[in-house]
Image (cartoon, rainbow over all chains, first blue to last red; front, side, top):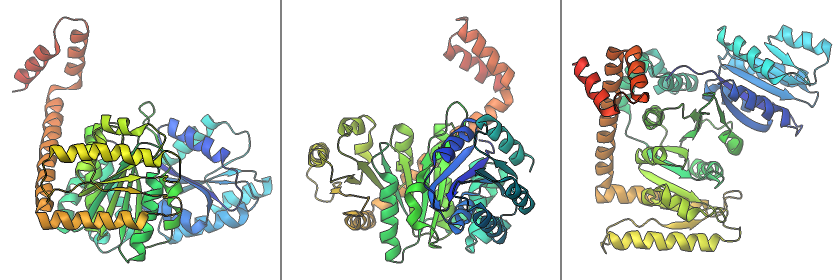
Length: 132
Length: 315
């Protein structure tokens, strides 16, 4: 058995639209990753705890509620406090351009908007996670 | 090993890293397991298995809530299949276990089968050892009951709970998979659905037949059949009572030690088998193996003759 990439896909916040998260989860699985899917309405604390227990290499957050500027920093800060600095964070959803820059500055490794190609997402994440 | 010490001292991230190490199965993993082993043997290991969609994860979630209310710490290993094509896996059991988030007395780990089925039983039992050594009093191992591999995993548990649900035509399926033979506790979940009584009755008949075959010995454990609605927790405390009663039965009857011995023997044989195979293949080399595959495919030689030639050459 060899090292496999593990990634957590979570939906923080209150919006109930998980189609996108599921499509991406499936694409990552098809790209050979072990995807831990946690479902809807996860708090940042729940996401950090799951990332820790599952020892993932990356966390993908799907946010369609517009609350990304509150939720993403809390997840990143939580990961840092838990000693999970090496875990890379990706965000999918409807993110305005000015927020994209702000999220990048916070250390988000990749941001994917509506219509992003799932193969490209999988390739990008794979590349980011294997770079160490 | 630093990681082992930290994990034993209750560091949850060290515990998580240790499990990854064991899943990736490197040389470090062997050293870690050697260091952990003296600390194992305390936990009550409970396997929960059944067909997809019977409600295993929900039942595990509810069982854990009841255990936690009693102050018992719980480790959970949730095993799901890897894709045979990509090697990836979609591990979704946490969706049904969200009630357990934020509780320091619970540790949940999702595990993919990663191809080799023989290796799965070994990897699972090694991960169970880590949680056992880390001090979790009960370790729940959830697997999809589909065949021999799951039966093997169940063998590593002290108590095996087989979950059924009405309307899946499951009694026969479960019989086929050999699941009913390994059950210490049978749960008919989704008991509010039509057909639950029939499912329970069908199971009752099978169990009775097994019991008759085993003789009229009063000291033999007969798997109780319980009905639950895991979604709202109905019947779950009763399931836990029976699980605890089974542990007491194992202890009182001497079966605990017997099972432990049988488990260790199976494990020893499995690991020996795998190690021998690995060593042999390393000596023979992949090129040789492929050459034999070609020759067997071309009907030049049969598989048994090939194996003898490989073994003779590797002596």
